[in-house]
Image (cartoon, rainbow, N blue to C red; front, side):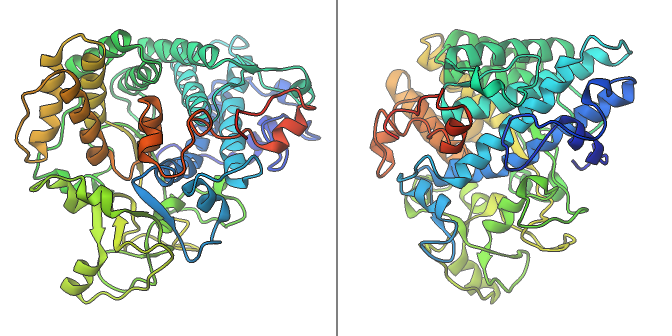
Length: 486
């Protein structure tokens, strides 16, 4: 993380892991993990190690967009990262290695958080409540990703899943996973401040926002509206102005007043293609870039995750967000003289929010070391989630329209005066254009029951979740059933 960094080599020995043995804990021949927590610094170091796997969610964000109707996979050819291509075409299977990476990396995050929770009572120190609150937020974040992607998942609470325990642990119902997520986020919200002295640390606002989102994913509209409106009223956030907004996704504007929770990336440390989860840089940004690009402002990329004409057409006339969300490469090349090559499924459009900019260190590979932070939850998202909860929960269309219009007005669009299902559809449309390129679209379509009508190849009763990786089922001794349809 940019401002929360340490050497975690020892911790990786203590806490985990083997890249090939997934989420299970492999016995180490080095320092005994049972004897690690002896000082406040040990807890703080372990906490930073738990933060570290947030950076691995770059894969989740990119595939959350590719799986939707917002983008095509792209790349060099139809076989360039075949797992991505399969997800784009809705033909993915339990042997998709990229889905297994999501499973493995998110469980690594869970286990790192649970390592702290397992020893939470071993030592008392002045910042202990804060450490536990941050830890519980992180556990909730990783479990939220797992339940979004895979549905029912094995659930460990306050203990690591040790090697061998996979033979006796069952997949927990989604309701149980969400119950833990809710409890963790309530604790975090009650015990963290709205602002932290160190950039990148979890705040009360981040916990409230993710709690509201978890409620929304369960159609708990009253609960979602309550926590999100409390955040809107009492939190320190505001929308950037229409003049500021085009700068929102530039590196120098990171961690701004609209950013409720932001995952930190850095170009200081290098990395390799052999360990994407080890990277401090945001590799997805490099993969999103223009193939063989030579011109001003932007760096080259691998032309993945290319926006469709359909999503470009979803923007209303005069919506300023189009200009800072989507790069029209043909128009840009004509204006600047830039040159580029076209890749597979070339649409002429690129994800301008998360595309490589010139000026970073590029060590050792420009595609892997991009310092662009990921704005996991923005205040505009909070406003639109609150609007949806108020409207779909039949609580107040007046307040729902007010929050919707705050986002529309910032985009220099006229406010709307509608209610009922018309307002619902307007909120859905606004979420699409406001959050395009940020990895939310697929899950928004699934949770609102619209995926089958919007995503080519989507099969109802199957594609709402992704398959459990076959290797994980084998590691469980066949104890876990596969998701339906796979």
